[in-house]
Image 1 (tube, rainbow, N blue to C red):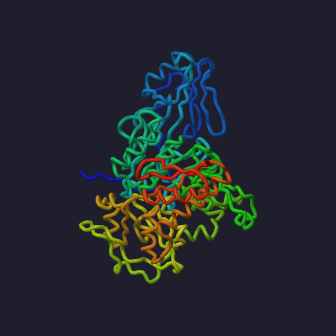
Image 2 (cartoon, helix red, strand yellow):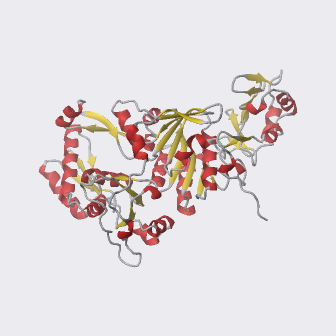
Image 3 (cartoon, one colour):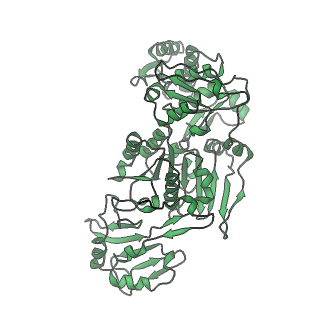
Length: 538
């Protein structure tokens, strides 16, 4: 029998609906605590209940804390609660089935539970109208903010909205905070699928498994907190999947200074400039620069529940911070009447980068792509290097960092796009192209120019870019010579070993010969296809 499905359109702008399942949590509390709590005013604002052995039980609200009993909590009270909630995992968290409540335990040195924090979990429908355009753009989004400001609530609502729009959404739910406790997820995540994580330190492995096994278009992750999870997020992003996640930190600048998580926004490395470049910039010879393309396209700082600072272009924002310039994010607030207001606009350049610039003179119907039945060939060129138009390239299975470097070296008018619908061309790895998954079938059906490379190497990417833009550029030997010269300069100035980009055996042999001319030592390290030359002092 047909049944109604709740869609985002069911919640007009400014209208919200809250589901807190408070009755299920109250049923797990000792009778005295429950009766005292039910006598309190404004239970809909309750944040958490604290039960510490030997202390009065406490109910915490946004603006006050209330002691619920005149006596201290006993061991029997704590056992009463723990026997009625789910099992505690290795992260000392438990839940109540089909609810979003989180019960966290404090243990003594013998492992016995001596304290409980019962945090109220609420599903708030209709909260993302303040950033709906960003969510639906297809770009990867990272949310930052202090605990309790509503990151997980917005994350849950984003997953529901995208899933109801037909996107394949998979949630990696480490502590069951997004989808609730139990095997059946909470209705608040809509049609999203939820993967539970057995142990917190396995979250990164489940993130990769979600992409490899379930072919999602969107992966939702809460609390990215380790280097392994940061690396897994980058791996997912390079496969063309939209990432939506949260991380520890109040602002983008805090995150950039966090050595564990800075890779999410590009990372930091020290670079030694030549004398001429240092004079041109008016800086010291050693400066900090962004190490690689950011994993996330957009960073949202949740200042308050209804006040957000949005960095639409993390690439440029990080570069500004490293140059000592304060960024100017877009700031949005939700007024008391429910309407969203932009109180500070993003810079004009950043707004232009969000718009799709048409390419004059290009006719998709006149372009051809490689056929699956034949050996992949390059499509006809998209533009010339002198064109002022910018070609948006969607990399499928291709390293974004290497492709970005190739674009910079050849100085072609192109930039990397994360959204297939926003792209003008696709560069795909041959092994992925042969399988012709859903995204490539969509590109071929739309007659989008598709370029295929045999291996995920820098030289292959420069070759395809030269074909695309009809530029002679630099051949492989010239690029290898440039890499050696840059590496030699760093070794002689800093004294530390430098590894060059992976190359073929022939190019590596040439690089070894070039290094010898500078009276330095070199060796080949790594395994194919990532074998590369390392330059060291003798």
